[in-house]
Image 1 (cartoon, rainbow, N blue to C red):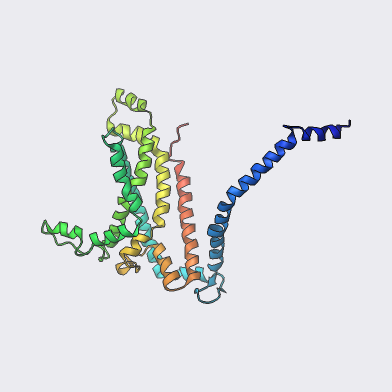
Image 2 (spheres, rainbow, N blue to C red; image 1 turned 180 degrees about the vertical axis):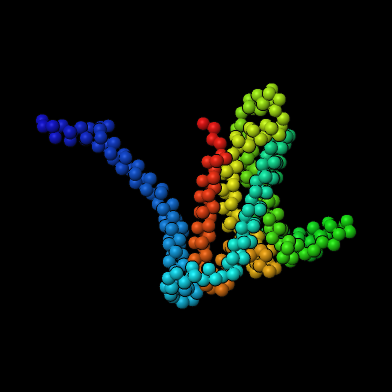
Length: 313
């Protein structure tokens, strides 16, 4: 028998490489079947619309007629758009004020809850609840009622003889109410911080106590460095989520951007251009601008993280 005949007989034998190849082939087909819905969703729901919006960002398109290619005209329009500058200013203030305060509140409560508080599961659920409801329409409507001229907050102030203003209708305070609403939804980062605190070895604190370190010194020298990867994670997600905030500003301002555009978030301005003014081409360009802004700030966060994030190897 030749070498070729022996190899063919070995492939046909039970348990041979031929059977193994058929099994691998069946596994590969099964994997392809299970992956097909995800790939289809990626192409149809994500990649396809993204590529279409990239094309529309170079066109003049109003949803009612064919798209007219205009090149870089939308970019030039951005440079001359004063309301775009206003929306970017409002969004930057919202992001870089609300996010650090929210993380600070979340970390503070996580430290308190980590001290063996009785009924921890109950308190953890209560504090997490606003994160589930914070971006909903119902909570935005409730917030509008609370801080209106005759809202619950002003009724509370009236008990002390204080005549409160219309917090939402005043340009000087409207954005602050939305910042407060964002801070209120601290539950998700708090739970993540709490999980991180549980991973810090207690021996570190015991050794620091023996050396005479105070609680503040332990927090500064042990807790913060050990939690720095968690802080970084929450910071990146918090900034990205804050840039994408829309529902609160839309509901509170009835889709107009508040008094004197004081709550004109970038996402709300994008919505106005696309679905109120039917400037879908310009709105697509704004959407890609938002993507670039988020990508830039995320890259800055990753670059800066090597100077303050400590990874315990």
